[in-house]
Length: 572
Ligand code: ATP
Ligand code: MG
Image 1 (cartoon, protein in one colour):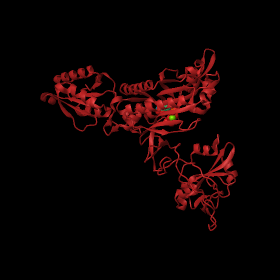
Image 2: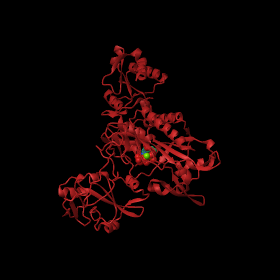
Image 3: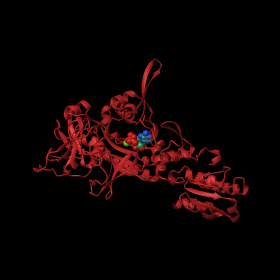
Image 4: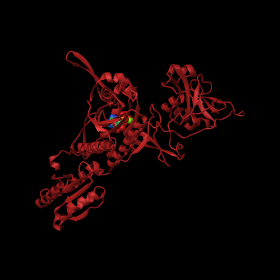
């Protein structure tokens, strides 16, 4: 491809509204342009990489036994009503009514395709003999994200590979899940993307029902907990904390807690500032309503409550923070002053509360706190639970080494769904005894366009992008230094033709620009190999070849240039 014939509008300046490196670099190197918040055009260079990533995904899906199909993005809202996801998605689901002839119709734009594919399967599959079956597509998804941001990392319209498996037994589901998991590892490896598979939310069938694939990156919106000593890694929401505790017994010589005034200080930060005491010496008492029953949750002041864990500890299906009136009714104070001493509802206790010799708590009275509260003495409990998010330096649940927290970008997700969709959409199979069962499903997503952004986010230096070869828009950039010099252009065009003939993807920068300008753009767009053809070099019979990551170029005889480049590419 000739630069002058394609469309690569590079930018010298960093666009002011782009906060993260991938957004900045994708704009600057002319890979994407914004249409409106959350919607981007993939420019010719960017779209080449999107297609390469999609192709890698496709090859690995095929290899794992999945079969490609293509479903509509436009979907009837009724399907989402039947699965309850119209409500669950809320505003994230693009849905709208429109007039068709004399009828009003209500549509959704697919945020994923569980509904459409399960409906299809419900009509086509009859018996276990037709199972298992795994289908996938690479298709545009629509989500009305509250905050589209970071360029194409989070958009309202994005390309996803979504696969769905249908099986008649759990063993079949587990086998497909494993095959998908392995395919995901191969995909990210081939894309040159560092990744960590992490345990995510556990599903209706328990166990490791879900894994997310995270690309570690400082700007990632997800928090990943990983062990410094073994391979344990989990989403922070899911991570077990590996702590245990001994229930403290009552101490007879503990002084009574002291009530102190904390006017208008209803948050741990405010009170800890006022009392000059570390948040870790506080007990936070959060008031929740679980399946209609009011309950207090005690966690240490420096920790974050984890609603998933709280729900599991209480075996509750419905959990929400109590409203102001309920808080007043059970604590006798507005929100911010609750504490275990004198609380008028039951409470459960996080493991770390047991280890506090004494603590500061709310006094269940407006603008007052208690100091010197001794767990086991001033309030009692018989068991403790894991109720909070894991934090750095917690012990690993597998090996007890210290956990660390890293930021990650979720690039893929595999999930054992169970029968949630098959039950609500009547997708059943008959077993060998002609008995009817709901089909057991799994779903497996990769954000293709997000993968592209994650690669740029993690593969760049000061000069620009450093593409992994398998996903680079082109493999080689050729730079003739002076396009007005006929001998230079003749040599450059000769090599260009030969490289093309050898099946190597070459971009030749045939613009009439100064060398420095072209070198800067070459670093910015970041193709893996560069070949410079200049008048001076030609007089000595050489061209200069280097990798994007090499400091210095190699001087290679003109006659050997093509072979040298081919060997270099194959050697890497
Ligand atoms: P997130 O937590 O980042 O919002 P999600 O868990 O809702 O993502 P899934 O439903 O698991 O996303 O979708 C599968 C994959 O699609 C994700 O792993 C991610 O790679 C990609 N993806 C999801 N939302 C977006 C988005 N708004 N823009 C780009 N890619 C996305
Ligand atoms: Mg997800």
